[in-house]
Each structure stands twice: as structure tokens, then as C-alpha cells.
Length: 366
Image (tube, rainbow, N blue to C red; front, top):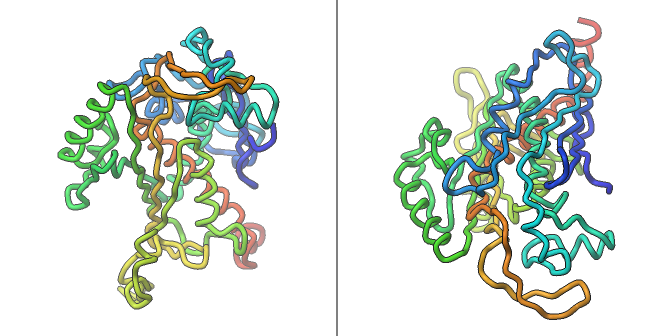
């Protein structure tokens, strides 16, 4: 299978299936000398793992990460890092009825068309469980960025049509919220809505917003590797994401140029902007402003209502899905969005090191 590797300089290859013995990631290009332990990675996996609240699947996984290579005496060596997460709570028997039938909204049909064969146990590589490997890798990218003063925070902006009030935003609250919402009032309404969907054996989607603060100006590789293009690819690689916006996004298409343009000015002898409709990216290159991006997530396709579908031999049938599934994917996808943004930004920052002669002079001839 091609397409399991992300990045050019800080490369991440994820491996493993939802119901296999284990899954994980191999990272190449991590700088040597970074203090790193499993304790640096585990908090990110804990935010993604199942079975942590009433709005997530009942599947119980510790998602304990093991560093198999690339670290010696507490620091990265510059050689490939191998990370492994054991699967401990597979119920493969729950998926027996989809061995010959295609689940609506899933990749069952398309995987069969591409490969002529598929791992039907939980979806194999197409399962959301694959994201555990990329979250583990992204935690390392996040640590590097944090040491450079860059912070990345994602949170739930909306569930269904219930959206947070920006004036009430509390990022610290989002970390303790079962649905990662930074607005207590919106959270209450959203939880009620999710409970109603679950009672009706249905599911719901939502929007995840991510803010990247203190990223330097000048990051992004025109023409085809623009920062916004790279971020879009990163977020669209998450299976449940169906749309991505940067800055004003769709609203920009309804503005006039005089409204949408971010006027430049000087503040305390520093370049500044009077607005940020561009979301911190101009011409595919970071402007130094906060980078703002939103990912729109579809409803969980695994619902407990009977659904029309077909079998592998092209016979109409009705399928009722068993197993353990999230009524809403959004809360567990928040950290996936956050870490994919970290991987993208770090990879392009490493690429940017060779874009100017003065950069090379600082490194090799200070």
C-alpha cells in the first residue's frame, strides 16, 4: 500500500490495523539531542484513546506507547524513531456480518475495488484507529515546536449546528470538556444533542478549529507546497474530514477586497496587521500572525439503524451494524487535527532552513 508516509524532512510512516496485534509509526528526520520519553507522547494518546467518556466508543484501549528505537540515554539519536501501540481490546466477531456486505459511509466498497481484498475487522487501515500512530508522531513534533516557542491548540468549534460563542472561549476548559468545547454553555447544549442522536441510534458531526501561535513569518514552499496547501492535505488525510477552511474561509468569497484584505501597519517598530482574514497565510507563506484553520468532520458512519447496502456479489441487502462506535467523532479527532498541524508546520520549517543564504551561514559559518 502506497500513501502511508507523510512529510519530506520530518517523515512519518504509520503502520498496523484496527484489529491487528499492534499499530504505530516510524519517524525519520527527527533532530538528535531532543529529550524524549514515552511520558512526552502518552498525554496526546490519552486525549485520542477510546472509552474515556459517554460520548466515545466503549472500546477500552490503554493506548500505551513504546519507543522501540531512536532514543539513547533519554535523548533522540537522529536515527529513525519507532513507536508501537498494542491493541488489547479487539472484538473481531462484531464485524462478521460485514465480511460480505459493504457498510454505507465507510471505505469497504472502495478498498475492495482498489485491492480486491480487505481487512473487514473494524476497517483495517481505513479505521480511525490508524490515527493513533500519527498522534504519537505528532506529539514529538509538538515538543520540538514548543521548544521554539510555537504553540498549537485545537478545540471543538461546533457539534451539529451548536457553535461556541467566541466571547466565552476558555481553552483551559476545553481540555477538561468531554467534547473538547471551550464554551460551557455550548457544551451543555451539544451534550444534550449528542444524547438525543444516540437515543435515536444515529450520529452527528461538527467542526474542529485550530490556532497556531508564534509561527515565524516565511514558512511555506510555493508553488505546490504552500503552507495552506500542505495543511489542507494533512487535514484531508484524516478519514472523517470533509472540508477545510483557513482564516475567513468561505466567508471570504462573500466579501469585497476592501473588507477581506488585511491592512499592514507598524506597532512598536514591528510589522503588524489590522485584521487576520487570511488566517496567518499570504501567498502560501506564513505572515507571522496566528494561523487559523478549521476542519469539518462528518457524522460517524457506523450507526445502529438498519441501512440499505449491497453484498460483495452485488445483491441488495439490509445491514445492521454491531460493535462499539462513537456517536460523534469530533472530540477524539481534536488531537488528531492538532498533531497533524504540528507535523506539517515542523516539516515546512525544516524545509525553510535552506531557503536563504543567511540561514545557512547561521548554521554552518556563524
